[in-house]
Length: 480
Image (tube, rainbow, N blue to C red; front, side, top):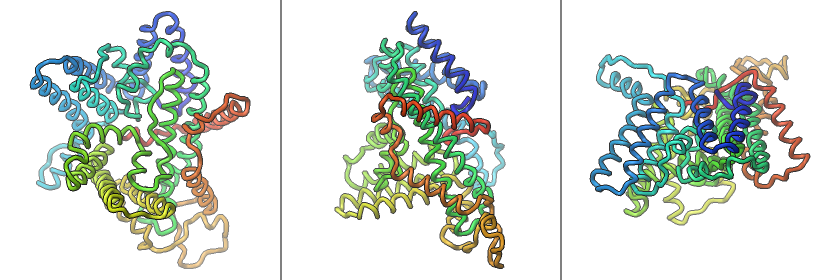
């Protein structure tokens, strides 16, 4: 089940919402249990075969965390922590990376190990990282919550389960024990509907439009030349932006309907003026996890400049691997690691860049790096980049004939897009301007006034978005 579907909006969500508050007035543990069961149903609806996997993961991690939370002999606790982390990493590695490693082993050694062609369990990357953080904090004696009901909600709460944010137990556990959160709070409902409506519109009204062009271009990279390669890559850059920010908004909005405040995961990253600023704005909770549980334990910036640069590079290498099993994701992580090292050195050396130049450089780098993130292979990525730099010629896309039917010189090549060129120019420009200059949903939420114009605005967004639900599309981060 996904947020942008009729089943979710008109069936699942209303039933869960109403029953939650009815049970909250009768007996809070019943309301918690209902929300946990609903969240597991939401997860299992997609593929029931993987429901036992998340349940086993929750039970084992809860048990290990409860053991680590007791002040026992340190060597024993350290060994149990190591086993707990290995269990989580092993689970993620088996389902997400087994075929990738075997495929490369076969290439290098000429072996013929059979691939398992495993279907990636939904959300495994997200709930694995959440639970690793919980185990580490339990080892540090920083967790005080051992109620399995609350723990189960922390892991499986449906608004954030599938694609984040990667929630820290300290951010939500106390909210599940607060009695006020089981009573209707109208301000939270109004803000939740606003943010959810904005997120839904971003997904079905904006991201899915750009997805069509991005998919068309990337499905036939050999035909791309200068103009349509930039159309293709900008379409994906904007698709990913509005798709991921749309999901993040919807998660925050849905959680507010249940009086739960999730952390901000997306804060206008294309406004960033350097790559460090970008990662303070993009997938914020992943950045926090990598910093707290990898960068700092490795020594952070406490062991000299060289070690600091190495630690920075390592966390971005891990980020690339976390996002996907493929060389393209690895290179994407390496690129961001190198850029982050250069950025830190640049700042420490006292160099400065004009604000507009800094922003343009950052955006261009992020845009070019997304080519590796999206391309199906390294060969495809290099083909697209070659086209973007003019190595495949400067032909016009096919859509130009819709505007100028008589314009047909010999050097014009028919290319993938059927959409009129001016139409693509206009929508790409609008998308870029929104990502660069518009207020984001959190800023709008914080400034909102509960009045008739705002109610009309939310209603129009929801009405338009629901009219687009006939063609249901997945969120991009479901793949990670």
